[in-house]
Image 1 (cartoon, rainbow, N blue to C red):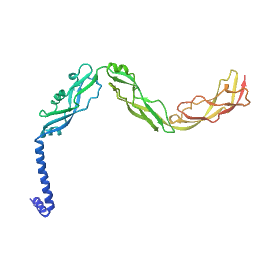
Image 2 (cartoon, rainbow, N blue to C red; image 1 turned 90 degrees about the vertical axis):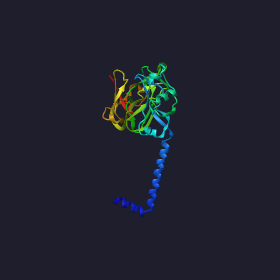
Image 3 (tube, one colour; image 1 turned 135 degrees about the vertical axis):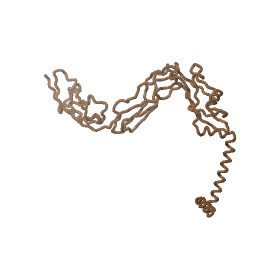
Image 4 (cartoon, rainbow, N blue to C red; image 1 turned 45 degrees about the vertical axis):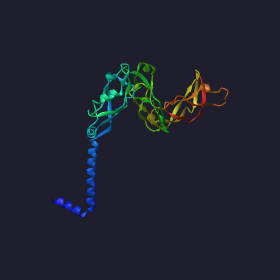
Length: 320
């Protein structure tokens, strides 16, 4: 009682508050009348009805199946509360009911409307359905296993290198389609991937490029491209002699040469795998020089900027 008296006193003391409450009162009354007039008459509403196709596991749909149907419904306004406050159930169509037996699943608008009457409110009138009809290709043939070709360009940053081959999570996929299409497909390709300025191993999922009138499973594969940092290295390498005739010994001065190169970090502790070579056949018998050219023999592909400290060394030939 005291609270009510306090409110009355404040309203009497504040004309602005009285005006605000009166304005709010008329808004509430107007809203009530609007709801009464609106929801007591017929209105139209577009509903998104999920679409599902009941099919055997060995059947693959080759055409895109819409996720939902846009259904225009006419009904009394108050009945639409049932659609606003509950999830619209999906429309489930059985493949066997609408298949022609030759790989075509067809449903015209009259059949769609008839099927929707079992999903929507029984008092509702279905005005329109989009898409107006369904015409979907399917296949029940087993999949054909074909290799996956990757379309990838990778460029490491300076002082980094591609170290090792590209690794795929799988080298083949299954393709489902009709017999004629399957016969023409012998490989599939990924979407184009291009990465530059890489400083770390690349790991990514890549999608298989779509094929008309066919389904690929799986649609994606994982790839890994190993990238490593390059470190400058210097090692001493024994110079080998090649093509020396029997009974001939070639003494080199110096007999070792320093080799500088850039190596992937993971190979720093390994033996160099680099050889330095002089070729006996490269000696000019008419030359007065006692020097022979030193070249790089074998060299791991992972190394870069391989250089020798000497491009030639002195030699003496001993015959036995």
